[in-house]
Length: 95
Image (tube, rainbow, N blue to C red; front, side):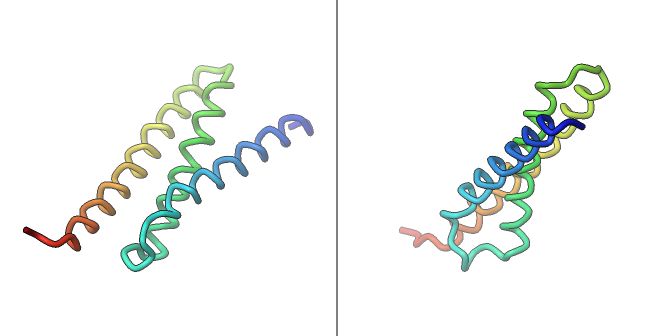
């Protein structure tokens, strides 16, 4: 791995970390356990990293594994946010 490849991977990691942090920042801390917040952040980081690496894939097996990672991370992140939405609906006042 060359220095340029390492810098690109590090850049993607940092960008994905900030994206994951922004995605979970607006959710009330009273409703999220640290584990759920961390899981959503990791899923978002995995999703962005998978997208970047799959797009650069030159070999078929890299693209296949990257696609599986994209699908898995998407399901996990969307599921976490759906659960959060369901929790938020429980605390709304009914008319």
